[in-house]
Image (spheres, rainbow, N blue to C red):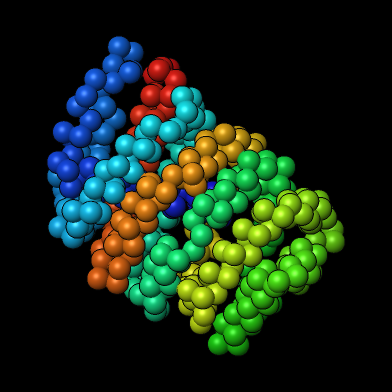
Length: 365
C-alpha cells in the first residue's frame, strides 16, 4: 500500500508538469540541445506516449485549467519555479530513479489499480467527488508551514532504518482483520475511526507533546509490543526526540486541524477502506521485501534532495502551491483526477523516469 500511495503522488506531480507542457505546446518545450544527445535518443522518443495522450485529448482538463485560468502572475511564478527546479537539483540526483524504473516495468497492474482508485475518488465513490476534502487540502496548501513540513518529510525518507522498520510493520498486518475491529458494517465504524484520529491529532498537537503518549495510541491499532512493532517504536522515539522534527510535526498537525476541523479527509479514507464496490484491500498485493528495499534506497537518495530544495526555495513553493490550489478547486478537481487516471493507465511515469535517469547518468544503458 505504501509504494502505491507514493506512486500516486508522483503521478499527480507528473500530471501537473505535463499538463503545463501541453498547455505550452507540448513537443516544443524540449527542443534545446540536451546533455545526452550524443548517447541517448532525443527527448521526443521518451515522450512519444505523452504526446499521443495529449493528441487524444486525455489531458484536456489539466491543460485547459493551466492554459485558460492561470493569471499572468501565476504563470510567471510557475515559469520561475520550473527554472529553479532544474537549477538547484544537484547532478546525479535522479540516478536512483533507475531502480524505480525497473520496479515499474515489472509492475504492470499497479497503474491500472491506481487508475481505478483515482476514478473512484473523482466520481465512483459513495460520496464522490469529495469536494469538501479537496477544499481542506487547498486550505492546507495555503496555510500550512511549507518549509518545515518538507524538511520533516525529507528527514523521514532519509532515515532508511525507520522506513524499513515501518515497511516491515505494515507488511506484517492483515488489513481485513484490522478493519474488522471497527465494526465497519455501519456508521459506528466511521465514528470509531474518527475518534481514534482525533485522539492521535490531539496527542500530536499537545504543547507538551510526548512521543510515548502518541505511540501508546498507535499501539491500540498496531502491535508495538511484539515482532517488528518493537523496533519501530524505538526508531520512532529516536526520530521524534529531536526538537526541530517534533516542532515541525506539531505545527503541521495544528494546521491540519484548522484546515479540516470536521475530519473530512478521514471520511474519504474511511470510504476508501470500506466500499465493497472498490475492495481496495484486494487491489494491491504486498511487495517482495528485496524489491521494497531497493525502492526505499532509491527514494532515500532522490526524493529528499528534491524536497529539501523545495523547502529552501520560497519562489518554487509559491508557484507550485498556486497551481496545485487551482487544480484542487471544486470546479476542476474531478476532471483533473480523470486526467491523472489516464496518465496512470498510460504508464507515463516510467517514460519520465527513463528520461530523468538518462539525464542524470548521461547513459541509456
